[in-house]
Length: 231
Ligand code: ADE
Image 1 (tube, rainbow, N blue to C red):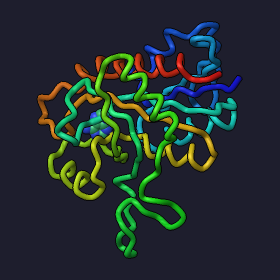
Image 2 (cartoon, rainbow, N blue to C red):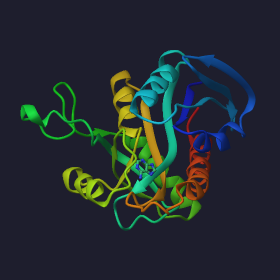
Image 3 (cartoon, rainbow, N blue to C red):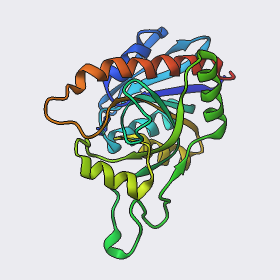
Image 4 (cartoon, rainbow, N blue to C red):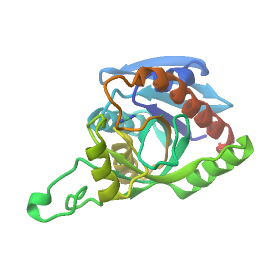
């Protein structure tokens, strides 16, 4: 039976999943904790990486190379770019890019370095499964482009630049790095985000108030996908 990795960045994103594991075992490795167990009869390994592309890449590679996971599902929150996305709505990434990867000084497009690609597509079969789960739950889930960078975006100008440059629907801080790792290692992957904010808030926006609620929406959806995955 193939092992499934479930990854998030923050404790709030992953704790609702860890809480539901059966026969849970904890492994300490590379300054992090990996939770191995079963959910709906499937073997899963769950971790939160800490925020940002470097920690997310390390954790994704560890889940694959050390724990032998053959599929990876990412759960978490994102800032909305597309005005159709409201707080609490879900978005499935069909492709991801790194908005802060910049060697334009050498004539390359934003988000591109030689040997890479601006956009990394996610696995079609998992996107299809995600749409089926949404249909069964009777909810509308958008799919689109997610832009990733090592910056919390709370600035309308930066948000507008990311929208214009990558035609992105949402933004966050890990997805594209996980996509690069999974693509390079030949592992099927799925990136789901629930909207926590509009990436342009003023100082009095309470991010934490929406984080927990939206993180739970995403975690519940991911657990339903695990149930429906083949062995
Ligand atoms: N994740 C959730 N909201 C975000 C934002 N505004 N910027 C970056 N990552 C996020």
